[in-house]
Length: 306
Image 1 (spheres, rainbow, N blue to C red):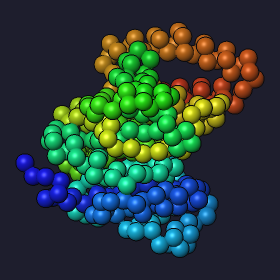
Image 2: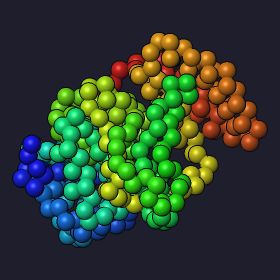
Image 3: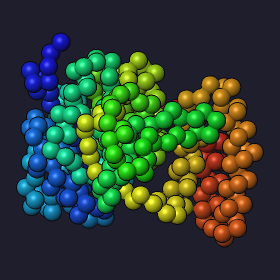
């Protein structure tokens, strides 16, 4: 078996910018410290109101290419757009959120597991919160519940005292930072753009696992994410996409029996509870978005556009 040092594979890093040039530049600034050098960074401007090109070019960040979509393609479509603009001979695609900051050896640490086990298709590092840097956001994912259509992150909100320092296989990748082998993309295809945002990495992970590959949590890799520890009140837009994509995921990945049980749970428990909650708080825009997320599934095919 060849080694990482012998192969020196080419890594195409894809990150999305949508009206967040300051944050994107902070991410790019952190990449100056990469110790691995055989990479490119594709910055996808995802239909921003202002063109970030001049600001990014002024930073003179290494190995950066900017590609622009005239419209917001969402996280799935935006990442696919970036992959399509990667160098043709890339070996790995590393999708990284622009609101993250990297550590110097992140690329090497994420590449290492691929050289230990050829069945590994995706590697994700440990994720800690940027503004609470000792607190874990992700140390792998627990298995998706086919009753509720939800999952939870291993180690979420725990202070990192080394309790999740053992690497190993996990049930799903995290969209903040996931390195995917080129072979997997060629065989499984890209992300399902129908999701637009939320559940897209869960869907991709499920398809990758069904194709015979494994997803690996690399505890020795570390990235810091600027997402808040406290999510606060969800926006109406988030309610819509989380609702519709939760159901879409189950339509695409549950067996008939599992889906029947999920629909019973969702209809008898989730719907009345959610309707009462939004009505009691007079959050009628959220309620409308919730209902819209459900009805979208009644009129839209479950099959992917990718």
